[in-house]
View 1 (cartoon, helix red, strand yellow):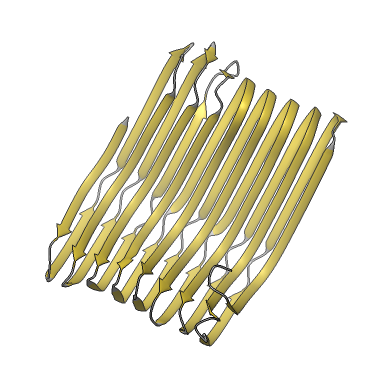
View 2 (view 1 turned 90 degrees about the vertical axis):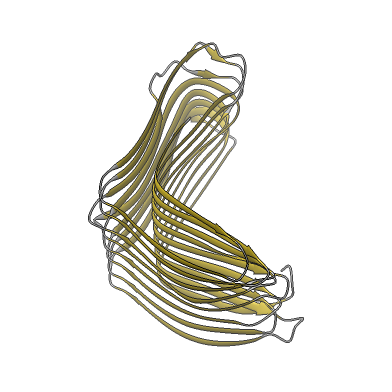
Length: 398
């Protein structure tokens, strides 16, 4: 319903050279205020604040992309809803705040990239809330609230992706979803996600990758908070995820050679609180990671040179509170550094891995379930890990 975009650039042609320079100095703010009574159909909100965006694609030929994106102001997206009476249809709310975003794809084309994304000492925040506690969400609800300082997405089909992507953020990154309702006799899911720097690469169909990926997150915090509450809920879930740096790549049909270098100084905090007096199914789930790398190749050769340093604390909490109900699930997971690499065994897969991980920040995960009356099943889990490394060769599809 409300979109704020400071700058955008698009490129789509063969044998292209793209030189992109984007600088945003002021704030970018997007807001939605919605007040409805007894809506009989779907209630939908799509609210996004974006500072710098670059989207490009090429079919056949080659693309040489050199890009610089810098955001020095605050980026904020806020969605506030007041729903009185009965909402007969589903309530779907998507709220997104992103400082810098880049997306490039090749289809039968090769991509060579040199990208640098910078976010200064600022705030990237996204929040969504239902303001009144008498809402009756008869058709269920889906809330997705996400904040991301830097994001890069690369890939395509039948393409070679090569080059360097650098991301640096000094921003505080925050997302929050808050809902109080009276009655939800349907599925309802409320999600908050915050990421400092994210890189995703997905190439299929006789593709290959040769990439250097460097990420630095140094703001005060990367936090995600979800509070989902209802007097009576049939299937209620609250989820939260906070990550300082994440790089995830997948390839099919050729070799993958990747150097990843991640450093996180920010406090990582994720919390999920779910409450319901009467409930059928309830889930509270939260996860936090300082640095995360996932690299997979559905072909025979995979080379990974990975370095991760996390000095920010990782604190994750999940809690459910109810009185009378059936099933409740509470889970929390906190990790300082994590890396996963896998190749295809059917292709006689070979991996060459060099891995260095250092975590000096405290890591904690706490799960709590409080049942005042009775319940059928209550399952809780909590896992805290300083450094985790997993490398394996498996069959395609496993």
